[in-house]
Image (cartoon, rainbow, N blue to C red; front, side, top):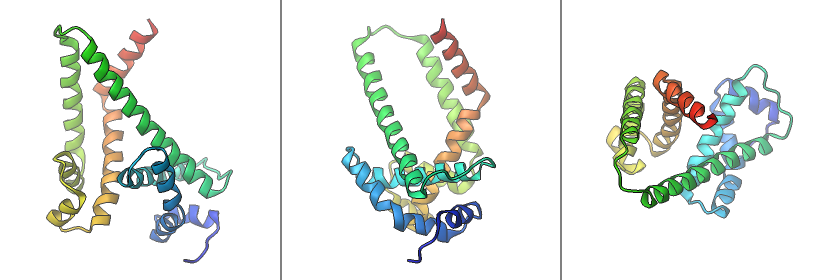
Length: 195
């Protein structure tokens, strides 16, 4: 594959040129896979982390004030490592939550049930705002259908489904985090934590 300088790749990302994404994949995906595997992840985790890292890179590059102050490879690696560490932290948080739940008294917690219901409503309201393709792909993942089977069912390539899933997941998370009810819940949690 032809070698490109970092600025050329940055400009190509801004223009959504496929050559840039193919170049990044060929150039950096193996090192990201190795990092994830060494930190206890799987091949699937590595693919997801690389995709999410590229989404983070796109968002960063799209900012008007973005200036590349290091090698592009270093930036890609740092974004992917941060993504993987956040994933690991969430796993620990979920484990701790379940442990606390098991240790806590079996009393019924009304507020927790209300919160759970609100989160579900926020999720589905946001989900319905996605385009049809995103809904179909994410629905397949929610039903735990393999990406290969989703691709066959919808008539897309496996690579397209995996790439689109990451993009759709990013869009969904952005909508959820921007949902007025979600913002109110987070603000009230912050207030409770401060007090």
